[in-house]
Length: 283
Image 1: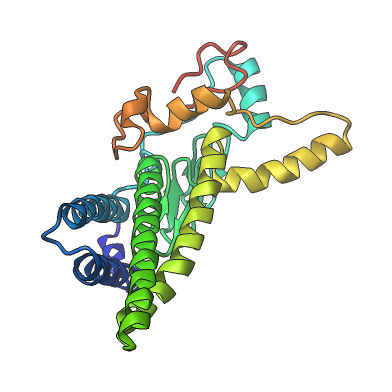
Image 2: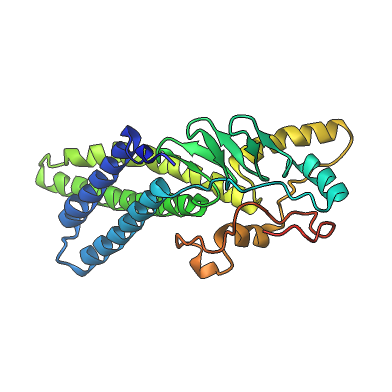
């Protein structure tokens, strides 16, 4: 694992934007509008600080965390040869071989050209964390996006409210005190909130269907080929909405917004629709 990936221009830019928005929201917007000494100002500052802290914490975890690597000892399990070989061949399972790594790769693993290795349950390589989003850090990445969206919406609501109040006060005072920092913050917040909200919605969709981004696009082609042959296609790892949520976010709903990963298993095996026929398949 190469650790030089921990530092990059997109990460520095991302942290700078987070720092600026935090400063502008707490020390300009909240302090100027409500006052940090008031109960409303203090509560909003505390809530936004908590959201910012969780965003930075999960962002750092997504950057530094190993997305999941294929163990050097991994080998296909073909003990139940006839059934297993047929199943894995159809579903792209244990018989998949990576020419670049010169080793077998488990189901849902893919080779990343940037990281130059196979990543377990790979979703995509993200330039903003300079790391792959995979089996071991997918939930952390999702929780980061969730907290970032909530923080952006909170900041945007405060910014709009404060700006409206400023305009109202200026009309009575015939002044021009509208702060330039409001404009800069708005220019950053509006597109950032939109992009992150779309990203959050996309990953909620993927989680509900137990897919990765790569599997979604593979599924589009697989569905087309199945329909062309007169068959129906269903994503093999789609176990139903609740089971999908549990498999990705964990068995305890109260921990779904926490960056915990103790439930994810090894990433070498995953439950499928075919488990009733292949009882030996387990996570």
